[in-house]
Picture 1 (cartoon, rainbow, N blue to C red):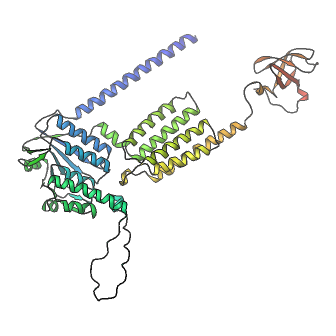
Picture 2 (picture 1 turned 180 degrees about the vertical axis):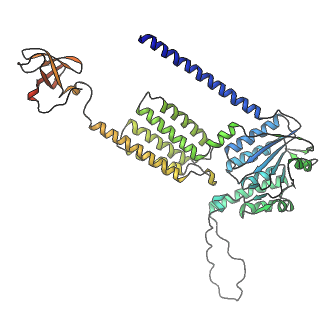
Length: 479
C-alpha cells in the first residue's frame, strides 16, 4: 500500500509544479499584456506627454529616459514633460538632464497643472529643456540643496574695533560658509548657469535660486525671462509653442505643434515597482530579511523556505541599493556586519561576532545613502529596530551555543554510559546485553542472569562493562 501512496504523492507534486509554472507564465504574459495595452500606438505626428510627478529618484529617471528614447524611436514631433516636483536626488536629476540635452526630439518642460511647482531639481530640469512653460498659479525655484541651505549659517567673526567715527552704517557682515558648503554651492551655480546660457534664459536669477533659495511665480518668471511662456493647459501650450524656433543639437528647428495629438505615456509597472523598492528604508529591510533568511537556512539546512525567501529579498535589496547614491564606507560596514552575523552561526563566539556585526551593520546603515534629500535618508527608528533585532538574534544564538556546550553527549558509545539495560544472556563474568536497540558484548559480575537489570559503567572498544543496578547510585533511564 505504501508504494501506490508514494507514487500518488509524487504525481501530485509533479502536477502542482507544472501548475505553478503555468501560473507563473500566465502572470508574466498578463503583465506584458497590461504593459503593452497601457501605452497607445505610436503616432509620429504626436506630442508624447511624460509626467514628472513627485520626488526625482532612480525610478523617475528610468521612466523619463525610457520615455525620451521611445519618442525618438517613433520620431515624435515633441516631448512634453509635465512637472510637479519638490526636488530629489542630484544623481537622478543629472541623468534626466543629460537625456534631455542629448534628445533629438525637442523637449517642452511644462509646470502643470495649477498649483504645481518645479522646486530644487525641477528648476534645473526646466532650465535644461528646449522650451520652458508654466501654468498659472505655479512656482519654481528654491534650488539650494537642503543639507546646505537648511542648516543655520555660522556666525560671522566680529570685526576689529575701530575708533568711533560717528558713521555706523554699511552692510552687516555676511555669514561665513564652510569650505565644503561653498564648494557644493559653487558647483551647483556653475551647472545651472551653463544650462541658462545654453537656452538663453536668466542666469543671474538662476544663481540666486541656488545661493539664496529664491522662488518665482509663473508671472514673475515670465517677466524675468526665466521661462518662455505661460499656458493654461496642454492644448493652449501646443497653440503657443507653434512656430517657435529651438536649437536641437547643432540644428535650428521650427516647432509645428498646432493640432498635434497628445499621447500620454504613463509610468508602467516596472517604474512603480522600482519606485517602491528604491526607498532606502525598504531596501534596508529587504537586505536584513535576506540576511536573517540565510541565517535560519544555515541553522536548519533543508528548510528551504527561509533560504529561498532570504535569497530573493537579498538580491532585490542589493538591486535597489545599487540604484541609489551610496557611500563606500557605508557599503563596506553593512557588508562586514552581515558577514560577521552569518559567521556567528558557523563559529559560535558567545555573541562576540554577532554583536560586532550588529554594530557594524548599524553604522553602515546610518552612512549608507549619500544624499541631502530627506525622502531618501535612512530612518533612525528603523536602524534602531534593526539593531535591537540583530542583538536579540545574536543573544539567542549565543545562548543556544552555550547550552549545546554544556549538554551531555547524546551520540556514540559515550551516550550509553550510565544507562540501565537488560541482560540478554550471561555465562560466568561475560555475556550480552541490549543497549541502544543493539546487542552488545558485556563483562561484569559473575552472578548475573538473563533478564537482570544492569547499569553500563564504561566502554572498552566494542565491549561494555556493567554492574548490577543495586550497585549504581542514581542513574538515568535508557534513551
